[in-house]
Length: 393
Image 1 (tube, one colour):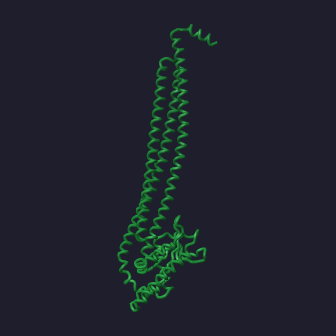
Image 2: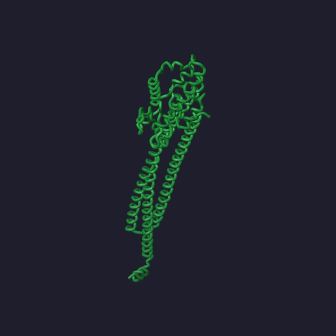
Image 3: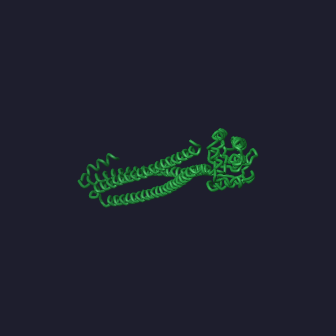
């Protein structure tokens, strides 16, 4: 498996794993929110309905038994009690209605925010995946044509006759590729490193990758002599050996200048702006590729560099998506605090209802005693009343 195929496989696995984790996390959060809202609504409805029915039943039964037995003053007390209880019931109903509306509003707002974040995350993931698949298709098509590129880039020798022109061409092509693929805060051109060297491009990627140096210079003199039709076979073989030596020497220079522990990543990138040179190295000089990998220097062409940059862009987008997940987590934490306050207020309301129930029982006891006195009066049991009054004194 070549380096390009390995990158493709890792890219596909990373994208699929990120999408799966994101879908699973979002599905779990939405299920938790839905179950919390349903449980809260059912608990409120059941408790309020049961307590309201119990209070009204006790009041009506107690007041109905006293209507025909007590006089004008007892009826006035009963009316006063009914008005007080009605006002308390109305106030309780209004309070619970306001509380329910507040909770429903908070849940609706949170649901809308979570849905919006989820939709945005899914949209960005789909866009990234579609972009990566398009780039992969382009790379596959380009790989099929690599064998024919050698004859199509002969004019490169005339265009890049000296080192300065060749270096400028590589830098311009590198800048165009990087600027089209990455956001401005993810790269810097002609950056000076702490050891005093100047790198053509310095990529700034999320941890643990960190800063990756990219060099756009490449040795080409011996490469041209390798394909000189006028040269002898022995000279072309000597040029081929010199070309391998030039590439290894350039790899050593990149590893020594641009791989700085604690400052840059543990690897650097050698950018070859010609696909033909890249194809020559990977097709006929595998020992040079192995040497570069041993030195932690990755040789790339414009096509393969685009795949690397697209992978880096996908990683940057994934980091931004994870930042949005923290926003959802903060919203859920606020909801948990609001629910804790609601639980405390519900407990206080339960205590008030319990106190009201005890007061109703006390009123009911007093009503029974008054009824008993009126019954004795109506039965002319005056002697028993006198005895009771004497016993109390």
